[in-house]
Image (cartoon, rainbow, N blue to C red; front, side):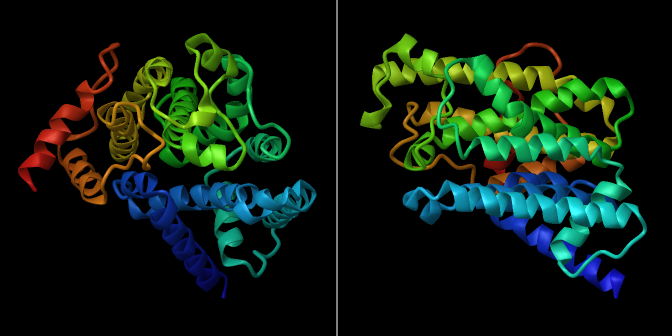
Length: 316
């Protein structure tokens, strides 16, 4: 019964990742099956918590009290299930939570990571903007850097020096999401571009237009984002082969979103910038064959994607 529960749980985690986190899904596809499921489980926990906080109906009603209660109930469910599993108890009846807890125990993920994560999710209920870059990083410590920490034991690094690059990659992924999703976040009443940067470039986000001021501001944020990717790149070489391919694929695919924002003249308001699924599949396949990009020097962001783009164009 326990094996059936876990099998079903990991299956549902994989489905969640496929539906909402295709970049994670294609990156994880390069891992051995026994490790792949753990990526899906970590992603599923984060996705479910995020869905509670981002429930648009609740946001429209302004009922943060109910959302806070739902988030706390979910966090309590996780902590209770984890405590039971670590004490040798059962896995409960929720297949997804059983899979998540099994992954945390089997991969020896530090439970403290989840305290920071749930703390950051709760911040979204009370904080709608961030004055400075340091303020935003304080939030991303629990919403992004900690995800890199959670994933690292799954990837089985060859050196403890992979720790900081893993955190940097989590930050890079999160910032890319923020820059892509400015319009959607405005609908939720949230702004993840530092207020001091908006003032510096004279941006009025209420117009939701790709004005010259916004283009300059977003170009600045993209440069900052690419620096985080460069900091993360040194960690790829500190992972075993399949894990390096996994992270390399996800890194390439996420960074390509920035290229597409630039190609759209920084207009993130008219439509959501996307990397097509076929390109994700082609990139993952190529990296599986030739290995992850070897970019540890401070090179321009788009350079590491060009060879994958070339292969993709040959397969159209």
